[in-house]
Image (tube, rainbow, N blue to C red; front, side, top):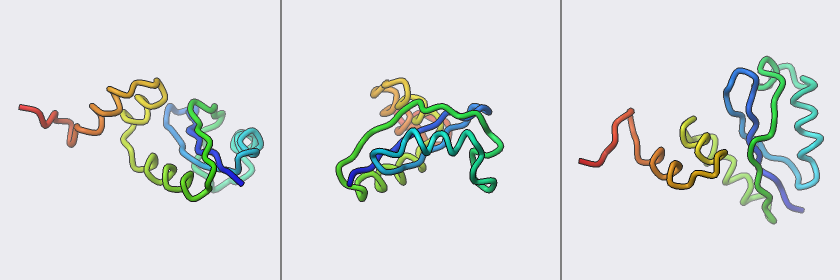
Length: 102
């Protein structure tokens, strides 16, 4: 069974990254919007909308990508959502707000 990694845009403008089974994305987003889990990050940030997702054949691959994305900066996530790969690379190079190039 495969899995899907997804990114939600929350009502407060923040991003949430999660994963679910390959047939569960619609159900999972509905749960986020219904506030099924009161202790969840998205509970006070509803409504949410899917802005990016990718399917994986192996759940282990999906979990690895989910963990990686959760460590990304907001700028890098925003570039991914836009499909701006050069922007993803630029955001990955900046640390502490400075461009490392001379």
